[in-house]
Image 1 (cartoon, rainbow, N blue to C red):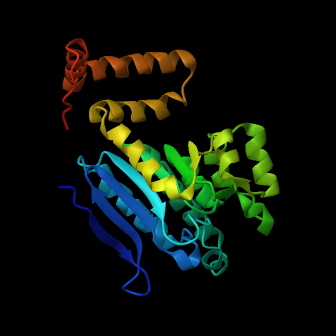
Image 2 (image 1 turned 60 degrees about the horizontal axis):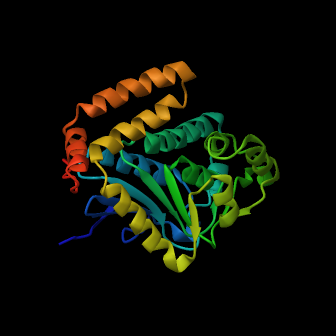
Image 3 (image 1 turned 30 degrees about the horizontal axis):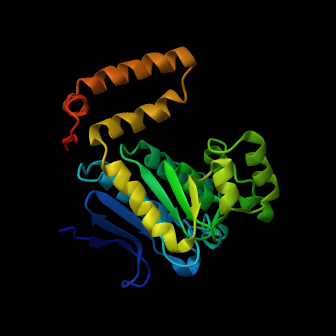
Length: 272
C-alpha cells in the first residue's frame, strides 16, 4: 500500500505553519513551498530550508523523482523584496544571491529528475526556480516573468537559468521588459515542457513520474549527471565523456537485465 508521509521541514513565525512541506509516496518526493500569503517568496529561511531538503534527498536512495510544488495563488514570486529592502548592505546581497545560486545548482546536482509543478505565477527567482528544474509542467493559468527590471533590478541570476532554457533573444527580451508570458508561450519557447488545463495538472504530473519510475533508476542517475556535464564541454570532449559514461552504464546489472528482457520479450526487473 502506498502511504504518503508528510513532514514539516521548517517552521515559520507561527509554529503551526511550516514554510516547506515534504511528502514521500512510492519513490516520489513532493516538496511544497508553503508561504502562500507571501506568494511563496524565497526568503532566507525558505532558501535555507530548500537547501536542507535537497541535501537530505541527495542522500536518500529511496527517492526516484522529486516534484516541486507550491500552495496558494502563486508558484513563487521570486525573492522576498521586503526582507531585501530591510537589509541594504552589499555583503548581505552577495550572501543572499550566492545562497540562492547554491539552491538552483543543488536541483541540477541531484541524481534524480526534478519536476516543477507550476499552478500560478512564477516571477524573477521563481521563474529561475522553474528553469532550474529538469522538467516543468504548468497549468494553462500560469504566467512567467523575470520582472526585476520593473523595480530597477536586472534579474542577473535568473538570467543564467532562463538563458539555458530559451533562446538568447527571447530571454533578453523578457529580462529587459519584465513582461509576462503565458504558459502556452512558455511551452513553445522551451521554458516548460507542457501547459495543461488546471484540472489535469496533477494527473499529468502523476503520468510523468510513473514514466520515470518505470525506467532503470541506475540509468536515470547516470543520465542526469552526464546530461548537464556534457553541455559545458567542447564537442569532442563531450563525446569522449558520454562514451565513457555509456560504457560504465553497460556494466551495471540493470543494463544486463534490460537487454536480456528485451531479447526475451518480457518486462525488465530493475534493481534499486
